[in-house]
Length: 461
Ligand SMILES: [Zn+2]
Image 1: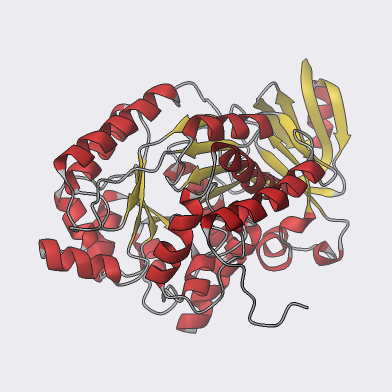
Image 2: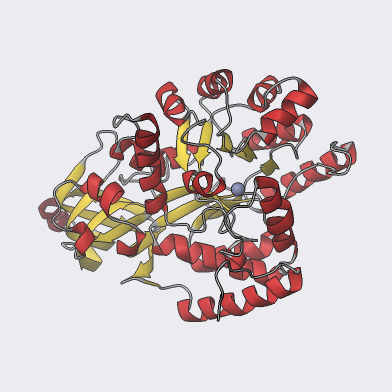
């Protein structure tokens, strides 16, 4: 039988139902789909491939799934903010002005920078944070670079001056969500599709959340938004509604297996129980929590959520929060953070953390049948980790190596939809050198235009 690609004599972390790690393995791909996985000798005898790759130096895993990324606004202003800012100063004095200074061309460049960093470190799919201003341009940039994504345009119905949600603003936001979902459908396995993603926090009314959930339900999509990274959200909801955010949204009918909350740090036991009951999803952005001082390890109930069946996934957020999109570093932190905070080494095992970064992400994205594991019939989204590196040798336990030892710098090659988008540490779809040079030039112009200042605590001479 003729196929497109056969990778032979390799090690495959399948993430299938039995969590098999197959040695002396082969992976067969036809078009955008995995045809077969098994022992190399069997597949070599069965298939004739247009391209055959000797996989002896590789460990092959499913592509990682990043469930919270600001793909615009921050990639071109990475590292602009100093440590020590409180949450509101960071958002309103730095991040919002930076977002608003972006041109359409800046957003295309920013999204390709974010996608390049993700692909080069093993992420094949991401859920964007709902902070895009020029959706069509961003979709175009992502299509060119070849990553898989679910994206959304900036949507809220909040009037900051009056702290209210005017009805006309709600109608406008709902129309926006309907329009983007109609323009970028996900029904036929499209790589780039839109979701009704909300900014969340206190910026969205119950009616807007309900509409977003209803749009998600009717198109088999998910609904996502930020919630409770710090105490501001619960304080605001309690003052306004007499209920905590998750309690309020549960009563509004917004919770479900296709609902995703990002951060979800400041929750009480009742909110955790509601999320578990709804089988809802949480994007654990531990790297942001660390830099922002949210309290994910102290106040956060992530071990309890995982134990009760909340679908915990991993996100890397923005480039002035956690500053990087290497999911292997983020997963390493998720695996370690709670062990140390609770003095309990059984929390978030390496296997659980890697599941959060793959299968749980796929489930949250409503794409469990397409991605998250390597099985016949699923999308050919996978990563070849290079074991000819010091951090990979000697190699005895593959999962320990992936979570505790390696990071995204060891990603040698990446396939999305059967296409090799990273080969021998270089992106094949765009000119990396040119993109990075453009990012520096555009970033400097953008910072100058925004009025924000480039600062350094130490003298730059
Ligand atoms: Zn965010």
